[in-house]
Image 1: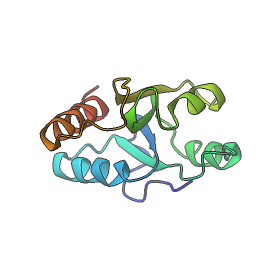
Image 2 (image 1 turned 45 degrees about the vertical axis):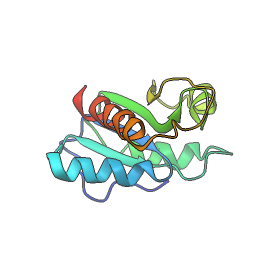
Image 3 (image 1 turned 30 degrees about the horizontal axis):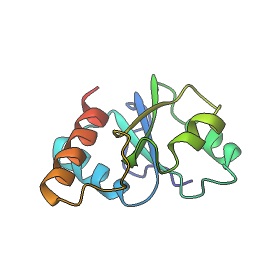
Length: 125
């Protein structure tokens, strides 16, 4: 579990949990747009889920109203199903690509469009 090193813990109202490369997309978007009320916490060990470490990190944020698991993979892939089943620490929402038979679109423009939508959902609402 890697805590956000940039966010002001007193201003954070939303925590985004993620794993992998999408972390860098999230931090770049936040830097460009100045979303100071959102923390990005990386969970790089999914199984077994490090519940105590997660609890100790989120307890340092006192004003959080929303917790979200975000993944770049489709809803029927990645860690989403596991997280929704086992992450019982706080109520967890999710953001992902729509369920799909393939892990990627195969077209850069479509991939970018879907990633932009994920980022918009993460920081817009």
